[in-house]
Length: 260
Image 1 (cartoon, rainbow, N blue to C red):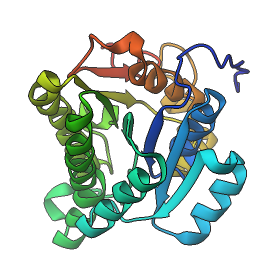
Image 2: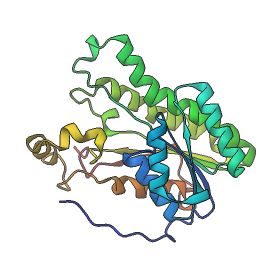
Image 3: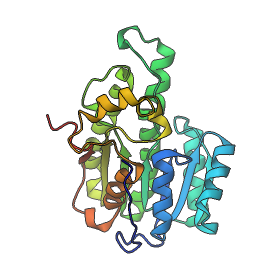
Image 4: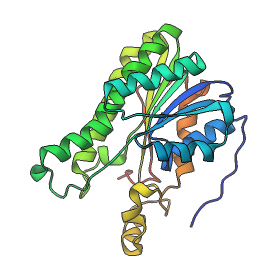
């Protein structure tokens, strides 16, 4: 059953802070951007398709407090342009949310061709590395910042059809720990959120099938898959001052699916 949620713009005290949220034209990324705007933040979103960016910016409806940039996060030039545009527009960067993710079903990882491997690894892991590297360069000069990576429980548990995706997300979790250690002296906290199944277009092939959904829900102690807002609040918490003493941590948000 879909849950009802309420919002309070004073929860996280993110007013006037500047965020870059990658892959924010739909799904979890768009929901994060919406809630950041409710918090009074200024948000830069990116995506690979201009049409998707335009639609998302209109949906966000935040005037000068939102900007959309077409960028492929696995390309250095695009990443450079994304962050340069952010600095030109807002003059600083308080937090980066590495949300971009994609998967191609790979029933057998040992038989996956190199093209599929590269596409999944580049989009999920290399993109987070490139954005974090550029974001950290800016944050070091400022003397503060937050980086939150979106991982997945697929990075902790081998799942059918999710092999290469899971490998990429496992890499995201180690990237989080390494950067958390390396950037701590600069007052930059790096953390990750690892969702289970979330009701988005990304996972629609699973939850739209009632039989498959029933089997998935049986493995979740809380008895439902997540809604995007279930992931948003942990992300906003980790971006807030309430998480200033947390770094290198992966917060699993899966309704208890990985308890055992």
